[in-house]
Image 1 (spheres, rainbow, N blue to C red):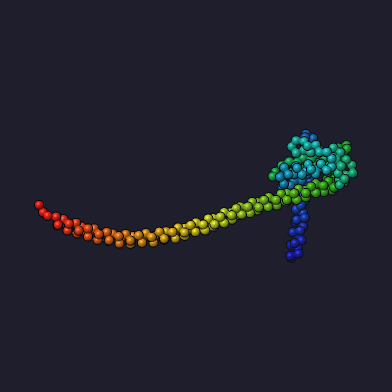
Image 2: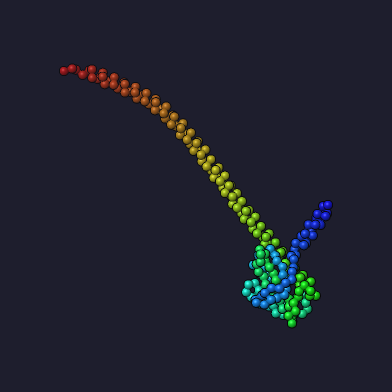
Length: 225
């Protein structure tokens, strides 16, 4: 059962690389073209960039408006030994990116579902789908890495702040402990000074009383007139 499950998964992965390829007609710059098309869930911008680079391998690419590409006399040995007129269009359609490509020969003969070169043309398009799927996976993984790296940076900064806070807390604790120690010494000094003040007050009171007594005695010695 486990082996069957693994085999099913492998088959699913292998099939998921390829999208369905259809044949049909599309109006490209006011002219109807027979060709092949497929859709992919990759951003139109990336598909256009990769498709232009892929087509450039087989001849001089003329970029038209609205995602249209042309090659006159394209040399694509994997499809045909004869020069091909390639007309393609990449555009957004119903939530997906659509890739249409027309391979034509002289006398307006196009590769369609009944043409002998159709399997080669279909494989050509599927190979590109596999390429952009892999490229998209690289972008997804790169973004995931960027996101994780950004989180790592945030955690690192947070860790640095926490370490600094701990150091600041330790310094504050040491300052407070020193302040408490200094405060304790100051308190002991104040208590000592209070006790000494009490003694000084008692002593001065005695001196005042003694001086008053001496004053009264001196007054008594003065003859009355």
